[in-house]
Image 1 (tube, rainbow, N blue to C red):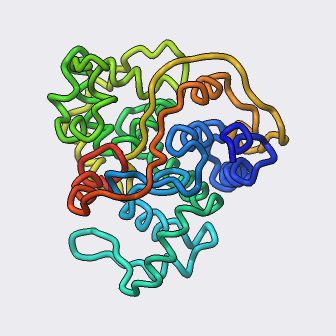
Image 2 (cartoon, helix red, strand yellow):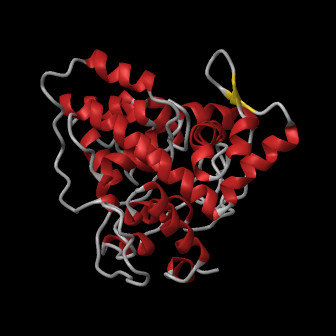
Length: 300
């Protein structure tokens, strides 16, 4: 299926994202843009260098944690009951077949969209406590990209030293995601430049560096990061803006859901899409390390 066909209002993937928007109250436009950036709306997409898979490129730990927390309210109570958490906070499924079935749901458009919507709501709440204001779509995307804790660290560093080299602050993430942290010529990108890159397709083209509340001590940022679980680290794409859009199904009726009226920026994403469609492969240890340190999904 072509990307244009997949993004049409009548496609099963778009319908699933719309349903998730209604169910979770998460902005439809945001979910759709995120799915486009992550997988090109390919439900079978897999990452080469981590366990990220499916429409929203959930890694295993983030997926299991989200299903455990939100499964009962979203129609996946049986799956949630099968997931346990060890003393170190990691999620696991004792039964091998059950684990495979639960992880395979990442490739189901409806399940993946519902969990992405629920996780986005959790992330928004956590960031709002930290920022002292409601996060914008770009900041939500950074939290999906880096994890909530990583996003808090990033925004804190950005506020203090916007011209600092992002790779020096996040060397492991930069090593796993060179196109985000380095220019095509190999030059280090600043925190400000990385921020602009990440938020450009989830908001306006004018992306000024945000300021964190002056009275917030760093300790609070880390406390919020520790308290929030699960959180996703995932995603990435180039920046830009253009015009276009679709309007198919009626609006959702849920505040902030956006209905199915897409923003013009979505067309630019289609034009400059650079997402991982590669088959799963590579060294297992490398994937595990990237789950923890790269920008392709992890529990903070």
